[in-house]
Length: 289
Ligand SMILES: O=C(O)CCC(=O)C(=O)O
Image (cartoon, rainbow, N blue to C red):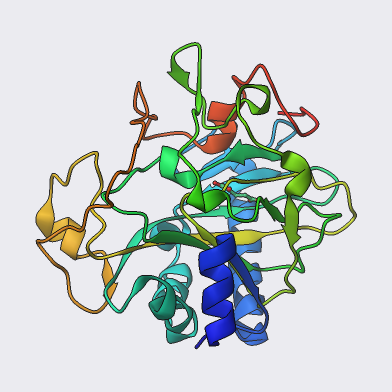
C-alpha cells in the first residue's frame, strides 16, 4: 500500500518510484525467463510478434530492444501482472476496479540499449478519462547511466501534445514545436525489484544505455475499469476478461473538457514505438536506431 504522501506526490507529479515491491526471488525468475527468450531469438532475423530487434542483432549475438506482450509469451509474466504486490500499489491511484491494458519488456542491453524519444502514452491509446498508468518493474537497477525512465514532473496535467510528423503518427513529440522544457526532466531511479509508475499523460522518454550494465524494464499498463478506449470496444467479453481486480462496468466516466487528439492515421497494431520512432526527423537522444 502507498502512503498518503506517495499518493499526493503521484497526483502532483504524474509519477512515482517505489523500492522493494517485487521480491528478488521473482526478479531472478524473471531474468531466467528473459534469458531463455533471448536465446530463442537467435533464429530470428526480423521483428516478429514477440521480438523487436536491436539493429545489431545476429544469431551469434542476439540483441533485443523489446519482448512484446510478455504476458502472452510466458505465464510467469501473467502471474506477476496480477500479483497483489503490484495491484495493491495501484488501487489508491486509480481505484479498486482495475483492467489490464497491455505490456512490453524494454531490454536496453549494456552499451547498446536504444533510447525512447519523448512521448505521452495517452497519444497511443486515448480513453474516456485519464485514470491509466504504466508500471515499470525493474529487472535490473535502473540508473541515469543505463537509461532509466525520465519524466517531466506535472506534465500529466497539461494537454496531449502532437505526436505526428507531416500528418503521420510517429509516436513522439517534436520538442521544438511544443512549449515543453526538457531540462526539467527527472530520472526515476529504482533498484531491481522496485517499480516506477507513470501516469498515461506524463511526458517521458529515456536515453540510450551507455553503461556496462543492462536495464531491463518490464512495463505493465493498467486502466480504471470506467476508462474506456476511444478507439472502441469491439469485444465486450474480451474487454471484461482483462479485469484484474474488482468489477467491470458498462458505464464509462468521461473527463470533462478533455481535448484529445486521436492518432491519425491510427498507430499500427503490429510494430513498436521503436519502429515508429525511426521515422523521426527531430530526435533528442543520440540517434542509433
Ligand atoms: O523503456 C523505457 O525507458 C521507456 C518505455 C516507454 O516509454 C515505452 O516503451 O512506451
